Length: 382
Ligand SMILES: Cc1ncc(COP(=O)(O)O)c(C=O)c1O
Image 1 (cartoon, rainbow, N blue to C red):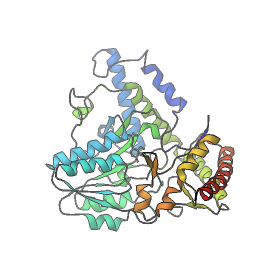
Image 2 (cartoon, rainbow, N blue to C red; image 1 turned 45 degrees about the horizontal axis):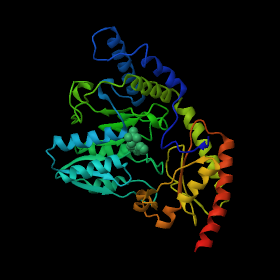
Image 3 (cartoon, rainbow, N blue to C red; image 1 turned 120 degrees about the vertical axis):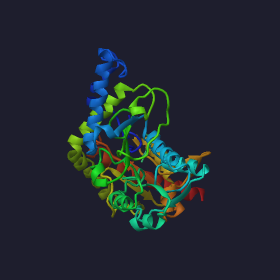
């Protein structure tokens, strides 16, 4: 297997999480809505996981609901707010939000809501002043992620939320990339909605959680029976919920140690890039996630380099999407003013707890070789 440097895409399940989940597939199976012993045990397991997540976020368990994904959580908040205000009014969101925010906002705009999309500055951060100047008397929601998935930049969520709170405007914070990497405290952030997703911090895929401040508008995407206090019909995925709870507890207990280990890997990597003249590390001077490095290798196609590294045994990501075989530059980079050639030359390296110093050193060595080989190819073609 290749050395894996794409932990913002997904992380491996922690074996301790798997161990916690396994009994709930067979011996301890049960439907939490059943009144018999199997059901009651499953209900207890779900409520324990809810408490574990609440503790990670400094929240009350009653304010935590389970969803299938970060995407579902983000969609659910935007659709609920739109419904609560009769599909009229205004939503503000940052251009660097995940598509599950942007596209949900675009969908409610088709129903009559108005949108303002805010560009990040050249450092990959959305300014508090730019949010303030976008607010209107009819603004119903502001969406600002805690940490960006491509660049890793941390956003001024607490400042924005405190400004919005004074005006009675709720704030949705997508913390999918932040949880397990930096402290996420809903009270300190002062937001109204916050989501996290299991597979980004060594929990299982297909399970996520949404924290909703008591009293904030919230409806249901799925209707049917009355699970999750009527907010999300469908039988709970008990093993996954248990895994999410365990991953949350481990993240809470190990946060400082993980932060130290991950930032050491990133700093080792970026330190060695200093003598590679083609390398430009994006957003190096702002507060970032400890494990995310976004780098342009000037003169080389990031997409080609990613494919070449894959052949050499390294899994990394490009920020670009590939449509009809043609790589497209990252929207986020363009919106912060990075040129198209530089955006197309970019790679995202996201480190994880199982990466070693040796893997990092080998990745840098491979990058050096890849840049030489692919630059030559570019000059032969041109
Ligand atoms: C910032 C952010 N929000 C939301 C999501 C969507 O999460 P999920 O994969 O659980 O739908 C992602 C996934 O990459 C993400 O990075």
